[in-house]
Image (tube, rainbow, N blue to C red; front, side):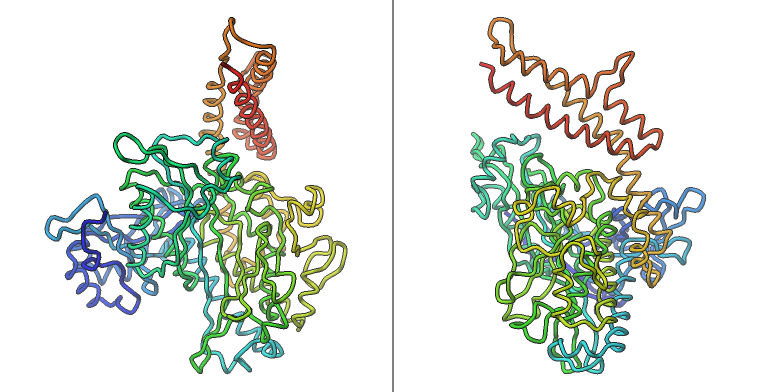
Length: 639
């Protein structure tokens, strides 16, 4: 249990208290806060953390708030921008968002009896004093561009106000509010425990874990986490068990052993930048509290093969604060009982779907993320949406990429749920690229001055039908389970083929240059930042495949040993072993005349033949899955 009074601790400093006087006063009132860190997010999604003693920060506060601190290109992922020959990077504080205190619950301040805290200040990365080159700056610029463009489109096409509730013209709008939220799923387990795939799969099919009561250390850690997150002001909505996991066992020590459970935590939406910053801090709190109770936390998208992965459904909305003080959703229709959405809502959703091939590389940028996106799970592989079978029958189709969330009695709830992101997606870039796609679709819909009925017809178009914006040879809407209603061949024809490797995903940048232009609008994602992101993602894929996945696969191959003895075996055991041994040799054994699949993959990566390496990676996955299943069957038959 938490053994200190949370009410005595400082958890956040809101934007209206970012004056020199307020900051100094708060830090002096809370001596448990002993460090300050400026948090920049590079193009790889990594954040910076440097411990500046509070005393030194206060002494230099005027300088630090304006000029920040300096680092170099070797400490952040900014390829093609900050290299060793031109490495100066400044970390400049963002004064317009909440600042959070990150507490070390294992280090207690002797003077106060409270955990030692670090004030984490979200910041921008600036190269050579004038070029902003980080994920946070991309999102900030996307939000700024979106707001300006929407106001221009509303001014140029006032017909749309006929379909928006509460506003008759641009003159009624005080400001636009870009609203977002994420849902965090994660696995917790006792250290060194490895999941039994069959047990996990069986528990998942039987729904033995979903929304069940938590026990022991998991319950305590979850409750403590929710209490602390509420102190930060995140507006926690709930924490609960997710579908994955197996029942823990009580050990002789009185603690639960063999813990392996999947959890989810949800909190209130915010404006887009704050939503991304909030998620970053939530992850730190989750990890710190659960590890304090002896539990490992992983935010991997697919930590255990064959069972549920962890998603991070991302919600996208757009509202207007009117001059009369009221709020209205720009996506909701004027009459919730007549239309699904306003023209802006339809245009926004169409923008996401049309441009998704070039959004996807920013969402699914790792081997792990693509392992989650497999047919048959609650993870989307098709570029398709669901609106609902009627305006009074909201969709709960869990198989689509982007779902429409709406409540006929609450227009402000109208938003899109993007289901592809995972806990390791770079939320800043996910939101930035999604909103840039949204404005692309809104601009097209309003320029054509389409009504909600006409736009619903466009979104519901059949394969081969022409459209003013969407592709002719695609479909974009399904109210059915796409994994049941369509064959794999039909899905690929109607909704496009999903990439299976990081390299296949990155190739979309070259295959759809026209769609990339939507991101470059307003100089939100200039070519140098796109090149930097692509280089970082490619390097990460290549290095992980070459130096982690291939060696790990070799280690797994070596564990698949012959186990039957000469005195007790059957012809079935021999048959299984011969098949197993052949796969083992195909994967990992070189001969004078034939190199193994693992060796050929490494050589393709070294030669920068990424098409071939990508094909080999898929072949490795296929053979490893076959080996896993065969070896399990082989071991199960041994007495």
